[in-house]
Image (cartoon, rainbow, N blue to C red):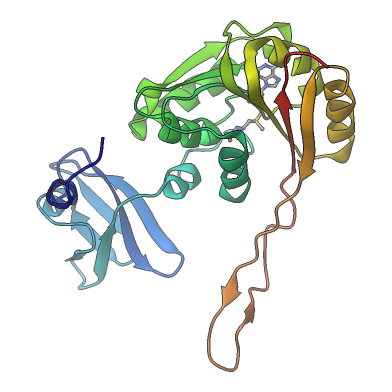
Length: 267
Ligand SMILES: C[S@@+](CC[C@H](N)C(=O)[O-])C[C@H]1O[C@@H](n2cnc3c(N)ncnc32)[C@H](O)[C@@H]1O
């Protein structure tokens, strides 16, 4: 449903329980949940989180040592980068392409494995809201519990069904919009994914090595899948200052390759 502009303004007033990004300076921002009676300490002093209540996004508060903390509404990237990590996570640059090419959006039914730290799960949950679901499979119980806590913290757990299951043994759901994999042996899931997907549904697999990509693509070719593509995303940030503008010295050199395919009902 469309929101009236006036309703949109109300939504910008910060309430208890909301998540807020405190932007302190370049490279220094924190995701906090507005909670009465709590202080938040940083290298630029502390603030009382209750002081955020009633402020608007875009305002600032002043810390006890006089630093300005700007109040920003969190983006999905803020959520993803702030999960507590117990595994390698999928980075926002790769998640962006995964979301766009898989067509995941409000109402989508998505199967995902492995849950890991829940970074990708959180991003998918954010986009399937309010009526979609993410069914997320994970073999390690301790990771599943950490992911549950991460998703609870982000207020996204209601859009996720966490399953302590080995996805190479089968997928319970049917007519799903997308199957998205980030695990060591994605080729073992290709047949199950074909069964679970609806016609035209998206298969996506993220893998750090080319060997995994080759095995996955070879397996995809045995089933009615079309539009098989393999992509790698590079993201380079820039330092901007007149006369000195150039790429940052350091960048994330490698994350992984993303394999995409679409299910068709027969060859
Ligand atoms: C790299 S992590 C996933 C990270 C996750 N995408 C994120 O962004 O936080 C890979 C996960 O797959 C899980 N895994 C490996 N094989 C699996 C299987 N057959 N079924 C379900 N989960 C599996 C591992 O235990 C591990 O937690």
